[in-house]
Structures are given as structure tokens and as C-alpha cells.
Amino acid sequence: MTRAATLCALLLLAAAPALAVIETYEFSDPQLEARYQSLSEELRCPKCQNQNIADSNAPIAQDLRRQLHRQLEEGASDEEVLDYMVARYGEFVRYRPRFGGAALALWLAPAALLLVGVVVLVSTVRRRAAGQPQQLSAQEREEVERLLRDGEEP
Image 1 (cartoon, rainbow, N blue to C red):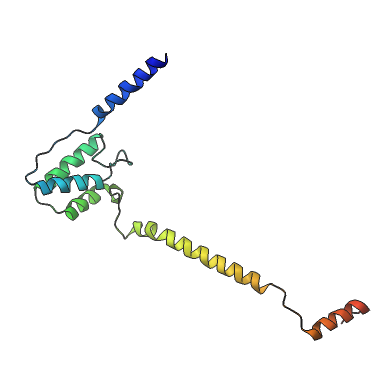
Image 2 (cartoon, one colour):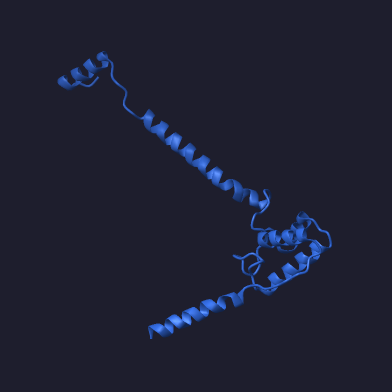
């Protein structure tokens, strides 16, 4: 039984490369191919959401790769390609969103929370330090001792 399970596991692992994305596009320039690889790793698959379009087998990822190839061959810059994809699918399609808009809050939230934490910590320490009893002067100490000894009220 153990051998059968091991054999099945090995066969499944051997079949895994068959699930990989195999698409070949002809590029007029090797630099375009390098840009294609870079951009396809930068763009997120709208369906899979945790894979880039280079690794996704989803039909929409295939369409995005085809569109990416077409735009690069037509001479579009990287920014033009990214702008097109963002206009069509939203900022979510980028793994590294631009610094601005709604993403600005996400970029600045950790620093803001840290700052709030430091302010709360400093104010708490100051409040506790202000509540510490102060040392009594010799005259005040004598007055307290007299009151305690006599049981009188001031």
C-alpha cells in the first residue's frame, strides 16, 4: 500500500510541469521579450489574485499576456501598458501600486500607526511620572509627623 501511494505521488509530481503556462510569442527584439517577462511578472491575474499573469493559466491571464505582447510590439512604453491595464482592471492588477490615491493610505498607514503608538506611549509615561509622589521638605515632614502624632486635623 505504501509503495502504491509513493508511486501515485511521484506520478503527480512528474505531471506538474504539464500544468505550467506554455506560451511562446515571437518578438521582433530581444529587449521587447525582456520587457514582456518583466511586465508579465508585475501584473496580477484578476481571476487568480495571488498569481501574476506569467504564472496563471486562467483565460483572462492568457488574454492579458496576448494584449501585453501586442502593445509591446506596437511600441507602447512600460508606463503606457501599465496605464492601460490599470484603466481596464483597476489598480489591483499591479503588484506594486502607485504611490497616490487610495494606495497612499495603505503606504502611510504603518508609519501613522507607529507615530500614534509613540505619542500614546510618551503621554502615558509623562502622566505616570507626573503622578509620582514628590519628596517632602523637612518642614512638611515635621508637620505630617505632628499631625499623625496628635491626631489633629489641620
